[in-house]
Amino acid sequence: MNEVMSRRTFLKHAGVGAAVCAAGGLAVQPALASEGTSSANAWGVLVDLTRCNGCDSCALACKQANQRPEEDQIPNQLSSDSYSFVDRRVYVGDAGQEQQMPVKRQCMHCLHPACVSACTVGALTKTPDGPVVYDSSKCIGCRYCQYACPFGVPTYDWANPLGLIHKCQFCISRLDEGEQPACVAGCPTGALRFGTRNDLLAQAHSQIDSNPGRYIDQIYGESELGGTSVLYLSGVPFAAMGLPTLDSQSPSRYAEAVMRKTPVIGLTVAALASGAYWLTKRREFLAQPEVVPQEVNHDR
Ligand code: SF4
Ligand code: SF4
Ligand code: SF4
Image (cartoon, rainbow, N blue to C red; front, side, top):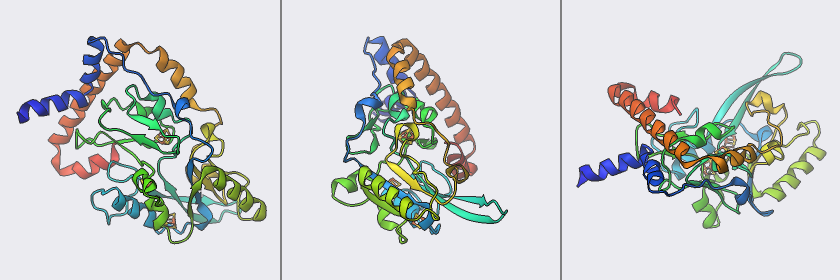
């Protein structure tokens, strides 16, 4: 029985499930990001980089809240073990002075998420309240979401075929209980603020207007890719902080047009290719048990 179950599980997570659907005439449909655009009162988080001291409390609180392994170890990148981390950047000013800049990173919970548009089976959805959430029971492991995300957020757990994709879910279970996201609650400096996106935008604009010497005149995420639920304030250009320079056009609109026209047979081929790739990676992983932690951390 176990053998049968593990084989079924493998087939599903190798992407062959999509082939079975196709052979049976069942069309797999992507969820369209534009259909899940959040309401005016959707939740958001404002990250004020001028208040961040790089203490890593947010990243550790995130690990604990999501019951990730080694929850007392500070992460240095996004991985299946860490849905958030504090990036370290060095900003060189006009006079050549260097400034250490910590930058908290996680899913941006885009208003028009490319990951949602790219997912052929609806495993990723944008909720009206703001969070972009993932349903592992629908995922076939094709990893299209990884390729589509402009922020490099979704990660794949190569060590665990049941693990599939991992990413920040905006602590949606905490929000349902009326609590703040764990990272916000864990920040001791007020660098992270939780509220409705509209309120946070108004507060951020007010902060810029009343402190023009402290902040550059830009709120990252207000318009990038059509807007994101996570917003940033900074005293230095965002490009220097490792945040990609993006226009205001959502890539999901293009992706949706393509996905609507993608024939099921194409999805089947892609799913089979994904399965073969998974097998290769899995074989590599099993052949090198002594380097398992590094392999997992450095290969999204
Ligand atoms: S940051 Fe990436 S994973 Fe998060 S919602 Fe946007 S496209 Fe999706
Ligand atoms: S919202 Fe939750 S899952 Fe996302 S980065 Fe913060 S603590 Fe982690
Ligand atoms: S907890 Fe707050 S101050 Fe500490 S690293 Fe995170 S955002 Fe920065």
